[in-house]
Length: 405
Image 1 (tube, rainbow, N blue to C red):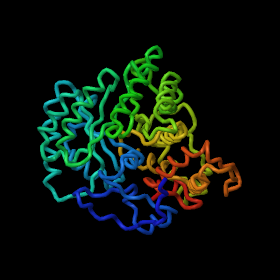
Image 2 (cartoon, one colour):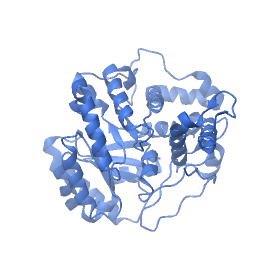
Image 3 (cartoon, rainbow, N blue to C red):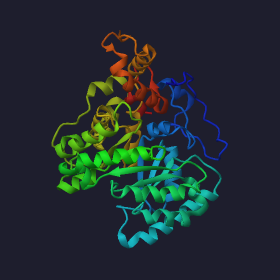
Image 4 (cartoon, helix red, strand yellow):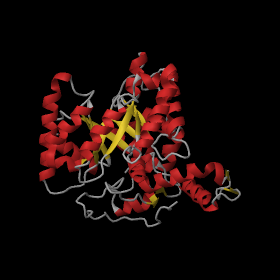
């Protein structure tokens, strides 16, 4: 297990030799802000980084319809706003009659991106409608395919999976850089109880067969809810919907075992504007008042945008083994990523567990828990991978300060 570097790394990384700019979480911070917030700063990564590093670094993945009239500018600005992974969607966000226009718009904007001087961009994935569209897009985009890190594969199942993977492999054979897939589990096979176990076992075999290609497994909670006529409100997390919670639990049980390096990402949060509430806001006042001079105003802004519900769901995602999250609005990005930064206490506990190397147990340096290397080893290794991608807060710093920058 390689431990994260202790270099606080304030300087922006230089462009890599293969023409892709390295990217780093919270690149909008200046050196002084980074120094004040982080005990260990996030490390830079790029398309040639190890697959596990990329999977842990996805963070808030911003979805944009491929018909967006300013797609090129949206992707360029995304990186400066802290987005490190983005999806251009040609599936559910596009009407059936709009597909030719959406493909042409995508090709035109990617051509302009390819022609302009190299700039930092997030990892870009294309969410496609069917396996045949993969080759069609590769022909349309042509040389700009070097900008594509991979494909998001909707309605992925044991039945459809081989065709998806075959088409991706054909395109990847001519790609200049590694090309990954992120299957989305959102169909009846994985939701309905009578078929779920067989489906998950079959998916496990398929993912193992293509383990070098599968970057992360995404959970399509919106489609899963639709199969049962459900939709969570802004006062509920997805874990309040028992059938969806149970499905997610089984997905995590299958793909996040200690022997697996697969990452499962959190489902989309749908809300971004003010509506009437049923319950009180979920953010404690004392947390914001203690950690930030302007904490009261920050808390009010988060609540007005219903980001307290998003924060609650991200915390629940992390507690249940999910990392990263699909987002549909740029205002969600910083909250998701700030909650992915590791606390100093967690970090030091993880280091102690790894260094024990399976021998005995010891009390945490914080005097509030026991660290046992055998049961806690997988947790510690995954936490250190997250620390490498998102950094470690200084003592006394929390997500509140990062949201308040």
